[in-house]
Each structure stands twice: as structure tokens, then as C-alpha cells.
Image 1 (tube, rainbow, N blue to C red):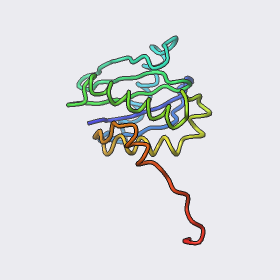
Image 2: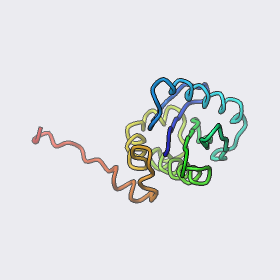
Image 3: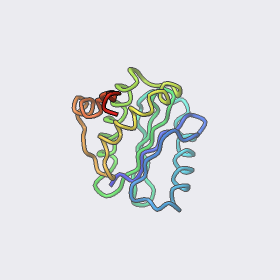
Image 4: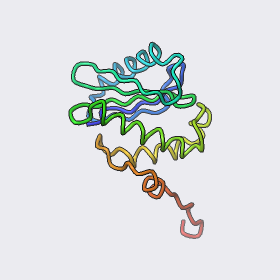
Length: 149
């Protein structure tokens, strides 16, 4: 199961988080741990250079994408190899939604579209879609028609 997807800026402020199967009392621990892990290891990291860590029975893959840091936590069948595939799909979809590697500002400007991408990629802790074209098609939003409201 994918336990968490967390995206932060370089200052450690959480921009987006998704937890699956993690009790609410443990979430603060995970936020703090992941941001500290990134602060210790992502300084000077190249864009989309993947890092792997493990703690107890969970695996963590994290990277820098433009002006944001992305962390993915998984367990059981989502080992470091599976998480690397998930990370590739997420980074690719974020770049696609933003048009390039996002700065923090661009990420926040495209926040809604990025959330839709994540919803199509991961559903309740399970990897759903990995094909970029399918994800793009599924998140296509049609503006509401004012005459129907």
C-alpha cells in the first residue's frame, strides 16, 4: 500500500499531502520525519535524482522537482522499485500539468490540476494509472455551462 505522498517546498512547508492507512496520530511524525530527511539529503540534489530510504518495514523514495520536494512512502508490495515507478509517473504528470518543472509558485497555481492527477494515479493507497495520456484524458475538465446551473 502507498502510505503517503507528500510534497513540500525547500523550507519544509507542506504544499500537498495524501495519507492512506496512516492513523491521524502518526501523521505529524511522518511529516516531520520526511521533511527532515529531505533537508538532510536533498541539498544540492539534481532535478529528478531519486533517493531511497527505509525505516522499519516501509520504503521511502524522494526527489526534487523544480522548486518542490516529493516524498512517497510505501510498504508491502510497494518496495523501492515499485515506488520509483510511482515517482516517475507523479513527476511526469506534475511536469505535464505545469508545462515544465514547477517552481513553488507554479505548483500552487496548478494545485487543482495536480490534485486531479494524483487522484487518477493513486486511489486509496493503490496505484491505478501509469499511462500519461490516460491520466491527461481522465483529468480533462469541461467548464460548467451557466445555463445548466
